[in-house]
Amino acid sequence: MNSVRPPLRTFSLGLLAQRVRAGLVTLGLGLRAAPASLDQDELRATRDVSIIVPVKDAPLLTAKCLESLARYAGDAEVILVDDASEQPATRGLLRNYAEQKGWILISLPTSVGHSGATAAGISRATKPLLCLLNSDTIVSPHCWEAIVACFKADPSVAIAGPSTSDTYGPQAMRIARQCKSDWNLRHVAAYARRQKLGTHQPETEDLRFIGGFAFFIRRSTWDELDGFDPNLPDYGNELDLCLRAVAAKLRCVWVKRSYIHHFGGSSYGGQVGGPDGIEARSLAATRYVREKAARLGLQLSHSD
Image 1 (tube, helix red, strand yellow):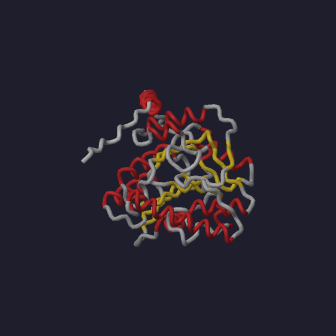
Image 2 (cartoon, rainbow, N blue to C red; image 1 turned 135 degrees about the vertical axis):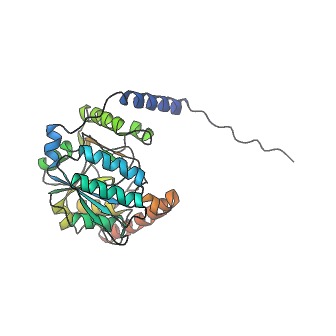
Image 3 (tube, one colour; image 1 turned 120 degrees about the vertical axis):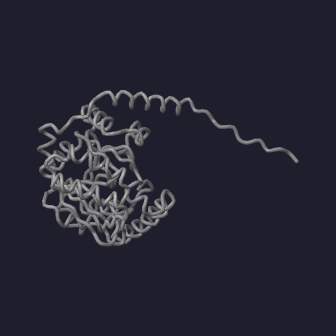
């Protein structure tokens, strides 16, 4: 019997160089202290925003999200929606932040999924702009002003999103993606400052799909399009809403100077069976959206 040699592992100098560079970037970012609060332009921008955060357990990452909001939400209206979390740590965390910061807390008796929890939060929102924020994110001191300015500059902008560390499409920055699990509030704040001050040509870019981790939408657009499709309880809901906005001749825009960190797959992802469950739900949702788009006479590219 001939022996079978195991395949040799390929060694990539390019991959090694990327990892070294990512480590050096992380080291450099960690040397700068995170700002204690927002500057005046960012603070002013928050006054037009309602932030809705649906939560389903994952208390460790949710705590990072809420810590960042406590520091950088400014004068935004913050609405936490507990989608029947099962862990006492999660429920206590939400209750404590709501009491200390004066945020709105909606506690649902039974789980209704991401779309349903988001809708419950929006029903209490009073601001003209909505930020639908995943609980596995860290907001930065440089994420509000550029996006709010984009909405104010053009009434046809209906949906917008920031640069990030993890999402489908071009919004994910390569270095941030490589470091996404390692960065804390200090790293995120420093990288966001670099992103805001950097040269981006163009500063905004129209996309067919904006990532759902931090999904900014006009309240009027949400109402006109009847919000998320009830047949999409989690994955695919933002894709479907973006397609309907584009069909209505509205713009979906990536605002490159804004940055919100996203750990990815850790908010509702843990409730659907981990990576395999996420992939299965995502594929099923994409299939549904493609069939719906075809009925509406819309075409999805293979990248959607």
